[in-house]
Length: 131
Image 1 (cartoon, rainbow, N blue to C red):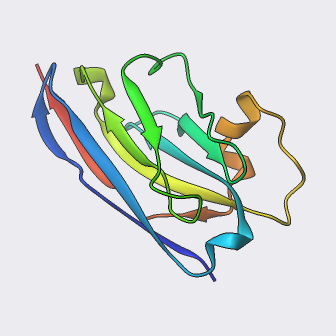
Image 2 (image 1 turned 180 degrees about the vertical axis):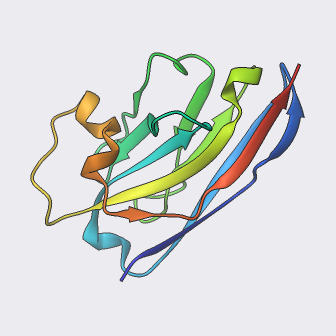
């Protein structure tokens, strides 16, 4: 069984930066995709960025492209999420998530950001951006 725990959330002023990390316990070789999502009150969960276990090229949502970046230290670790130029509308609970290798292949693109494709989720970390 894989477990994910996010950290690094907090309160920041608009224009500031935060870095979120995700620690995975369990066998990471069983995972094929890892991503970051967020959910604001009253809104659906939104995919932000994702990476596959075999590629170093992330896929980003248009809403965060150019401001957010994901990277990882090695293929066995979850990618961290670096958030720059934060805006009040970025306020949400942020989650990391993972897809097991038993899932069908997901072509590079929007499917990487579909929360329905992800089986494993962390508990979330709150990010609050004030104006």
